[in-house]
Image (tube, rainbow, N blue to C red):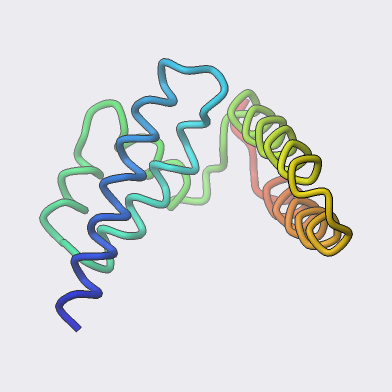
Amino acid sequence: MGSTRYLVMFIGWVSVVLGVVGIFLPLLPTTPFILLGAWCFSRSSPFFHNWLIAHPKLGPIIETWTNGDGLPVRVRNRIIFFMWVSMILSMLLIAKLWAVLLLGTIGASVTVYIMRRPVVY
């Protein structure tokens, strides 16, 4: 069980690093990676989870999501746009019907889920 904890913690750190890089690179979304990192840390390390929630720049992303206050419209639209760009690129690269159907279904489901979340103007 201990090795699973370290794997989840590792995934959390990779997610946080990608989220921070996403602040500076417009093609890499920040919010989903920070949320994934918070989820991973909540399952593997209370210390890192508390650190991330208390972080002055990254903490508000998690707080807004967990309070149900919603996502800023700009962030929501950016998430959906870049998710679909990456999905379509993946569909074109794989070029298999099963991949197109699977990625299309996943993309549509995530889009519906995110669009139903409350937004902050």
